[in-house]
Image (cartoon, rainbow, N blue to C red; front, side):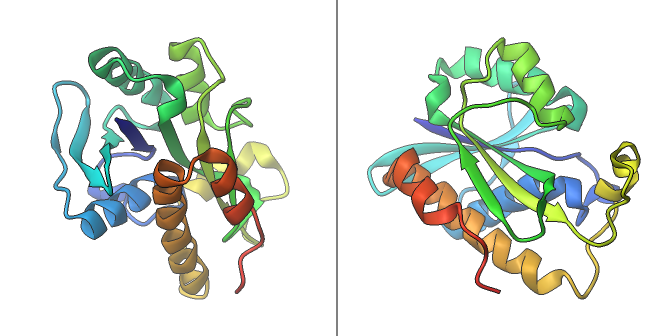
Amino acid sequence: MHLLVGLGNPGRGYRGTRHNIGFDVIDRLADKLSIPLRAGKGEYLIGSGSVTTYEIGLVQPLTFMNNSGEAVLDIRDRFDIPLDRFLIICDDFQLPLGHLRLRPEGSDGGHNGLYSIIYHLKSTSFPRLRCGIASDLLPPDKSLASGFVLDSFTAAEAPLVDDMLTRAVDASLSFIVDGLEKTMNRYNQKPSL
């Protein structure tokens, strides 16, 4: 089984914000694959289905972004899935809006959700798909980024966001079917828009 975990914050007030891109990707995957998300046995929503011959799980932690690792550790222990079969999907304010970056491992890069996952798993060796959210609205002082990531996208940004979400869904499915290296080669590029 592969587990695709989208990071975000639960609740209506966070919908459509930059920090909830991971949730948005999982929502689109759930729609595309007709996989309903339901309350899991821990602090997360989960749904299961298949892509070609591969069994998959879609997950949205409900622990809020900064405690994402609690839910991911619970899922890892409950399903006993190797970390290389996880794909953590999150926003990245270091990447320009619309860019995707898939990596097999690495640091948290200043992302509190990834920090929490690394802390709880005691490992940096899990694939992650970062979705760029940076724009001209990002404050030059990165210590002020917390307000930026909790803002909604502007109407002018909507086409780039929609394109990025479509490509993130495709990259997530490619990760399962084609593997990490092929997917990195295909999707770690500047968007066409």
